[in-house]
Amino acid sequence: MKKIVVFLFILTAAKGQAQELQAKVTILANQISTQVDKKIFNTLQTSLTNFMNGRKWTTDQFGVQEKIKCNFLISIDQVSDNNIFRASLTVQASRPVYNTTYESPLINFQDNDFVFKYVEFQPIEFNENRIQGNDPLIGNITAMLAFYANIIIGLDYDSFSPRGGDPYFQKALNIVNNAPEGRDIAGWKPFDGTRNRFRLVENLTDNRFAPVHDIIYSYYRSGLDMMYENEETARTGVLNTLNLLTALNRDNQNIMFLPFFFQGKSNELARLFSKATPELKTRARDMLTKLDITNSSTYNSLR
Image 1 (cartoon, one colour):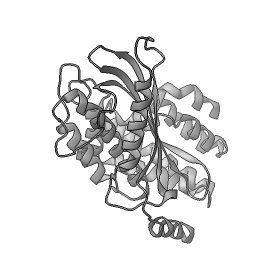
Image 2 (cartoon, helix red, strand yellow):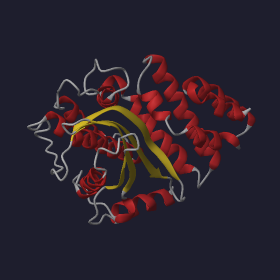
Image 3 (cartoon, rainbow, N blue to C red):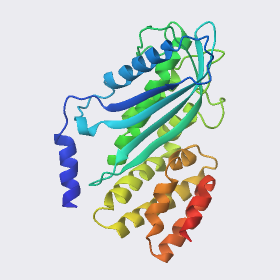
Image 4 (tube, rainbow, N blue to C red):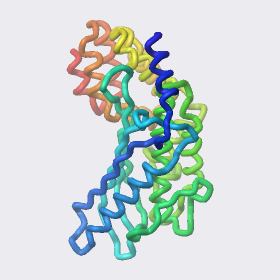
Protein backbone atom coordinates (compact mmCIF):
# COMPACT_ATOMS: atom_id res chain seq x y z
CA MET A 1 0.00 0.00 0.00
CA LYS A 2 2.85 2.33 0.82
CA LYS A 3 4.29 1.92 -2.66
CA ILE A 4 0.97 2.87 -4.25
CA VAL A 5 0.74 6.00 -2.09
CA VAL A 6 4.28 6.97 -3.09
CA PHE A 7 3.41 6.31 -6.74
CA LEU A 8 0.37 8.57 -6.58
CA PHE A 9 2.38 11.24 -4.78
CA ILE A 10 4.97 11.17 -7.54
CA LEU A 11 2.23 11.50 -10.15
CA THR A 12 0.92 14.58 -8.35
CA ALA A 13 4.26 16.14 -7.51
CA ALA A 14 5.70 15.66 -10.98
CA LYS A 15 3.15 17.89 -12.67
CA GLY A 16 5.02 20.09 -15.09
CA GLN A 17 4.42 22.28 -18.07
CA ALA A 18 3.62 19.66 -20.69
CA GLN A 19 0.27 19.17 -22.40
CA GLU A 20 -1.85 16.14 -21.56
CA LEU A 21 -1.57 14.09 -24.74
CA GLN A 22 1.31 12.46 -26.54
CA ALA A 23 -0.68 11.92 -29.70
CA LYS A 24 0.43 10.47 -33.00
CA VAL A 25 -1.85 11.29 -35.92
CA THR A 26 -1.46 9.20 -39.07
CA ILE A 27 -3.23 9.80 -42.38
CA LEU A 28 -3.61 6.78 -44.67
CA ALA A 29 -4.70 7.60 -48.22
CA ASN A 30 -3.68 4.50 -50.17
CA GLN A 31 -7.11 4.22 -51.78
CA ILE A 32 -7.04 7.74 -53.20
CA SER A 33 -6.18 8.16 -56.88
CA THR A 34 -3.05 9.96 -58.04
CA GLN A 35 -5.22 12.84 -59.31
CA VAL A 36 -5.19 14.21 -55.76
CA ASP A 37 -2.04 16.04 -54.69
CA LYS A 38 -0.76 13.76 -51.92
CA LYS A 39 0.97 16.70 -50.24
CA ILE A 40 -2.36 17.71 -48.74
CA PHE A 41 -2.37 14.56 -46.62
CA ASN A 42 1.03 15.39 -45.12
CA THR A 43 -0.14 18.91 -44.38
CA LEU A 44 -3.31 17.62 -42.75
CA GLN A 45 -1.37 15.09 -40.67
CA THR A 46 1.02 17.76 -39.39
CA SER A 47 -1.78 20.20 -38.61
CA LEU A 48 -3.83 17.64 -36.69
CA THR A 49 -0.79 16.41 -34.76
CA ASN A 50 -0.01 19.97 -33.69
CA PHE A 51 -3.65 20.52 -32.77
CA MET A 52 -3.86 17.44 -30.54
CA ASN A 53 -0.51 17.93 -28.82
CA GLY A 54 -0.48 21.69 -28.63
CA ARG A 55 -3.92 22.29 -27.15
CA LYS A 56 -4.50 22.37 -23.37
CA TRP A 57 -7.36 19.96 -22.68
CA THR A 58 -7.52 20.26 -18.88
CA THR A 59 -6.68 22.78 -16.17
CA ASP A 60 -4.14 20.36 -14.68
CA GLN A 61 -0.42 20.45 -15.32
CA PHE A 62 1.22 17.31 -16.68
CA GLY A 63 4.84 16.25 -16.53
CA VAL A 64 6.40 14.80 -19.66
CA GLN A 65 6.29 11.28 -18.18
CA GLU A 66 2.58 11.67 -17.39
CA LYS A 67 1.42 12.34 -20.94
CA ILE A 68 -1.27 9.98 -22.17
CA LYS A 69 0.00 8.06 -25.19
CA CYS A 70 -2.56 7.84 -27.97
CA ASN A 71 -2.88 7.23 -31.70
CA PHE A 72 -5.36 8.63 -34.21
CA LEU A 73 -5.37 6.74 -37.50
CA ILE A 74 -7.43 8.45 -40.20
CA SER A 75 -7.99 6.21 -43.21
CA ILE A 76 -9.21 8.27 -46.17
CA ASP A 77 -11.66 6.41 -48.39
CA GLN A 78 -12.71 9.20 -50.74
CA VAL A 79 -11.94 12.84 -51.57
CA SER A 80 -14.45 14.80 -53.63
CA ASP A 81 -13.79 17.78 -55.88
CA ASN A 82 -15.18 20.16 -53.25
CA ASN A 83 -12.57 19.11 -50.66
CA ILE A 84 -14.86 16.78 -48.72
CA PHE A 85 -13.09 13.80 -47.18
CA ARG A 86 -14.80 10.52 -46.25
CA ALA A 87 -12.82 8.45 -43.81
CA SER A 88 -12.74 6.17 -40.79
CA LEU A 89 -11.01 7.07 -37.53
CA THR A 90 -9.27 4.53 -35.30
CA VAL A 91 -8.56 5.79 -31.79
CA GLN A 92 -6.10 4.06 -29.48
CA ALA A 93 -4.75 5.03 -26.07
CA SER A 94 -2.88 3.23 -23.31
CA ARG A 95 -2.30 3.59 -19.60
CA PRO A 96 0.86 2.50 -17.71
CA VAL A 97 0.52 -0.27 -15.14
CA TYR A 98 2.02 0.54 -11.75
CA ASN A 99 5.72 -0.22 -11.37
CA THR A 100 6.05 -1.92 -14.77
CA THR A 101 6.96 -0.94 -18.32
CA TYR A 102 3.70 -2.48 -19.56
CA GLU A 103 0.94 -0.24 -20.91
CA SER A 104 -2.64 -1.48 -20.92
CA PRO A 105 -5.16 -0.43 -23.62
CA LEU A 106 -7.60 2.26 -22.50
CA ILE A 107 -9.38 2.54 -25.83
CA ASN A 108 -9.09 0.79 -29.18
CA PHE A 109 -12.10 1.92 -31.16
CA GLN A 110 -12.89 2.43 -34.84
CA ASP A 111 -15.36 5.13 -35.84
CA ASN A 112 -16.50 4.67 -39.44
CA ASP A 113 -18.59 7.86 -39.66
CA PHE A 114 -15.98 10.51 -40.31
CA VAL A 115 -16.78 13.09 -42.98
CA PHE A 116 -15.11 16.50 -43.04
CA LYS A 117 -14.03 19.34 -45.29
CA TYR A 118 -10.41 20.40 -45.47
CA VAL A 119 -8.63 22.93 -47.65
CA GLU A 120 -4.85 22.78 -47.42
CA PHE A 121 -3.41 25.15 -44.80
CA GLN A 122 -6.82 26.05 -43.38
CA PRO A 123 -6.56 26.77 -39.61
CA ILE A 124 -7.34 23.80 -37.35
CA GLU A 125 -9.32 25.39 -34.55
CA PHE A 126 -11.79 24.27 -31.90
CA ASN A 127 -14.07 26.38 -29.73
CA GLU A 128 -16.01 24.29 -27.23
CA ASN A 129 -18.56 27.09 -26.94
CA ARG A 130 -19.13 27.28 -30.69
CA ILE A 131 -18.64 23.75 -31.99
CA GLN A 132 -20.79 24.03 -35.11
CA GLY A 133 -18.76 26.85 -36.67
CA ASN A 134 -19.55 28.53 -39.99
CA ASP A 135 -19.25 25.31 -41.99
CA PRO A 136 -20.43 22.08 -40.29
CA LEU A 137 -18.12 19.89 -42.38
CA ILE A 138 -15.11 21.99 -41.42
CA GLY A 139 -16.17 21.95 -37.78
CA ASN A 140 -16.68 18.19 -37.81
CA ILE A 141 -12.98 17.40 -38.01
CA THR A 142 -12.04 19.16 -34.77
CA ALA A 143 -15.31 18.16 -33.06
CA MET A 144 -14.41 14.51 -33.68
CA LEU A 145 -10.86 14.82 -32.41
CA ALA A 146 -11.85 16.94 -29.40
CA PHE A 147 -14.58 14.43 -28.52
CA TYR A 148 -12.14 11.52 -28.43
CA ALA A 149 -9.47 13.57 -26.66
CA ASN A 150 -11.91 14.15 -23.80
CA ILE A 151 -12.99 10.50 -23.81
CA ILE A 152 -9.34 9.41 -23.55
CA ILE A 153 -8.58 11.84 -20.73
CA GLY A 154 -11.78 10.87 -18.92
CA LEU A 155 -10.95 7.15 -19.11
CA ASP A 156 -7.41 7.81 -17.89
CA TYR A 157 -8.64 9.85 -14.91
CA ASP A 158 -11.34 7.27 -14.13
CA SER A 159 -8.68 4.56 -14.03
CA PHE A 160 -6.76 6.37 -11.28
CA SER A 161 -9.56 7.71 -9.08
CA PRO A 162 -13.29 6.91 -8.68
CA ARG A 163 -15.33 9.08 -11.08
CA GLY A 164 -12.21 11.12 -11.78
CA GLY A 165 -13.09 11.39 -15.46
CA ASP A 166 -16.55 12.94 -14.99
CA PRO A 167 -15.56 16.53 -16.02
CA TYR A 168 -14.13 15.28 -19.32
CA PHE A 169 -17.03 12.98 -20.11
CA GLN A 170 -19.26 16.03 -19.57
CA LYS A 171 -17.12 17.97 -22.04
CA ALA A 172 -17.56 15.13 -24.53
CA LEU A 173 -21.31 15.22 -23.89
CA ASN A 174 -21.34 18.96 -24.61
CA ILE A 175 -19.66 18.28 -27.95
CA VAL A 176 -22.30 15.67 -28.78
CA ASN A 177 -25.14 18.02 -27.81
CA ASN A 178 -23.74 20.82 -29.96
CA ALA A 179 -22.19 18.75 -32.72
CA PRO A 180 -22.13 19.88 -36.35
CA GLU A 181 -25.21 18.91 -38.33
CA GLY A 182 -25.42 18.17 -42.01
CA ARG A 183 -26.70 15.68 -44.57
CA ASP A 184 -23.42 13.76 -44.65
CA ILE A 185 -22.57 14.02 -40.95
CA ALA A 186 -23.40 11.00 -38.78
CA GLY A 187 -22.56 9.44 -35.43
CA TRP A 188 -23.70 12.24 -33.15
CA LYS A 189 -27.39 11.31 -32.85
CA PRO A 190 -29.21 8.45 -31.08
CA PHE A 191 -30.72 7.29 -34.38
CA ASP A 192 -27.27 6.98 -36.03
CA GLY A 193 -26.95 3.34 -34.94
CA THR A 194 -26.12 1.51 -31.72
CA ARG A 195 -22.32 1.96 -31.77
CA ASN A 196 -21.69 5.67 -32.13
CA ARG A 197 -20.43 8.74 -30.25
CA PHE A 198 -23.86 9.47 -28.79
CA ARG A 199 -24.17 5.96 -27.32
CA LEU A 200 -20.62 5.98 -26.00
CA VAL A 201 -20.93 9.24 -24.11
CA GLU A 202 -24.41 8.25 -22.91
CA ASN A 203 -22.89 5.15 -21.30
CA LEU A 204 -20.28 7.34 -19.60
CA THR A 205 -22.56 10.12 -18.30
CA ASP A 206 -26.05 8.67 -17.70
CA ASN A 207 -26.61 7.55 -14.09
CA ARG A 208 -28.33 4.42 -15.40
CA PHE A 209 -24.87 3.19 -16.34
CA ALA A 210 -23.03 4.36 -13.20
CA PRO A 211 -21.34 0.93 -12.67
CA VAL A 212 -19.28 1.67 -15.78
CA HIS A 213 -17.02 3.90 -13.69
CA ASP A 214 -16.58 1.29 -10.97
CA ILE A 215 -15.57 -1.16 -13.69
CA ILE A 216 -12.89 1.13 -15.12
CA TYR A 217 -11.44 1.93 -11.69
CA SER A 218 -11.63 -1.66 -10.45
CA TYR A 219 -9.94 -3.14 -13.52
CA TYR A 220 -6.90 -0.90 -13.27
CA ARG A 221 -6.43 0.10 -9.63
CA SER A 222 -7.73 -3.05 -7.90
CA GLY A 223 -6.56 -5.31 -10.69
CA LEU A 224 -3.62 -4.57 -12.97
CA ASP A 225 -1.89 -2.11 -10.63
CA MET A 226 -1.71 -4.82 -7.97
CA MET A 227 0.28 -7.25 -10.13
CA TYR A 228 3.60 -5.94 -8.83
CA GLU A 229 2.73 -6.57 -5.19
CA ASN A 230 0.57 -9.69 -5.40
CA GLU A 231 -0.48 -11.45 -8.58
CA GLU A 232 -3.30 -13.40 -6.95
CA THR A 233 -4.76 -10.21 -5.47
CA ALA A 234 -4.60 -8.63 -8.92
CA ARG A 235 -6.37 -11.57 -10.55
CA THR A 236 -9.06 -11.50 -7.89
CA GLY A 237 -9.51 -7.77 -8.55
CA VAL A 238 -9.93 -8.36 -12.28
CA LEU A 239 -12.33 -11.24 -11.58
CA ASN A 240 -14.43 -8.85 -9.47
CA THR A 241 -14.42 -6.50 -12.46
CA LEU A 242 -15.77 -9.32 -14.64
CA ASN A 243 -18.55 -9.84 -12.07
CA LEU A 244 -19.42 -6.13 -12.37
CA LEU A 245 -19.42 -6.41 -16.17
CA THR A 246 -21.69 -9.45 -15.99
CA ALA A 247 -24.18 -7.57 -13.82
CA LEU A 248 -24.02 -4.53 -16.12
CA ASN A 249 -24.67 -6.70 -19.16
CA ARG A 250 -27.56 -8.48 -17.44
CA ASP A 251 -29.26 -5.19 -16.55
CA ASN A 252 -28.51 -3.41 -19.84
CA GLN A 253 -28.68 -5.71 -22.86
CA ASN A 254 -26.58 -4.62 -25.87
CA ILE A 255 -24.90 -1.79 -23.97
CA MET A 256 -22.17 -0.27 -26.13
CA PHE A 257 -19.68 -0.06 -23.26
CA LEU A 258 -19.30 -3.85 -23.11
CA PRO A 259 -17.59 -4.40 -26.51
CA PHE A 260 -15.93 -1.00 -26.15
CA PHE A 261 -14.28 -2.09 -22.89
CA PHE A 262 -13.00 -5.41 -24.24
CA GLN A 263 -11.62 -4.01 -27.50
CA GLY A 264 -7.89 -4.73 -27.44
CA LYS A 265 -7.91 -6.47 -24.05
CA SER A 266 -8.44 -10.15 -24.95
CA ASN A 267 -4.75 -11.12 -25.07
CA GLU A 268 -4.08 -9.12 -21.92
CA LEU A 269 -6.83 -10.96 -20.04
CA ALA A 270 -5.77 -14.38 -21.35
CA ARG A 271 -2.20 -13.77 -20.18
CA LEU A 272 -3.39 -12.46 -16.83
CA PHE A 273 -5.34 -15.62 -16.01
CA SER A 274 -3.00 -18.11 -17.70
CA LYS A 275 -1.12 -18.64 -14.41
CA ALA A 276 -4.20 -18.58 -12.17
CA THR A 277 -5.35 -21.53 -10.10
CA PRO A 278 -7.53 -24.01 -12.04
CA GLU A 279 -10.66 -22.83 -10.21
CA LEU A 280 -10.00 -19.14 -10.87
CA LYS A 281 -9.01 -19.86 -14.46
CA THR A 282 -12.28 -21.71 -15.07
CA ARG A 283 -14.39 -18.93 -13.55
CA ALA A 284 -12.60 -16.32 -15.62
CA ARG A 285 -12.92 -18.33 -18.84
CA ASP A 286 -16.64 -18.95 -18.32
CA MET A 287 -17.35 -15.24 -17.81
CA LEU A 288 -15.06 -13.98 -20.55
CA THR A 289 -16.44 -16.29 -23.24
CA LYS A 290 -19.94 -14.97 -22.47
CA LEU A 291 -19.02 -11.31 -22.12
CA ASP A 292 -16.60 -11.07 -25.06
CA ILE A 293 -17.94 -13.61 -27.55
CA THR A 294 -15.86 -12.22 -30.42
CA ASN A 295 -12.66 -13.31 -28.68
CA SER A 296 -13.97 -16.54 -27.12
CA SER A 297 -11.32 -18.59 -28.96
CA THR A 298 -8.61 -16.60 -27.16
CA TYR A 299 -10.18 -17.31 -23.77
CA ASN A 300 -10.64 -21.00 -24.56
CA SER A 301 -6.86 -21.28 -24.29
CA LEU A 302 -7.41 -21.03 -20.53
CA ARG A 303 -8.66 -24.64 -20.42
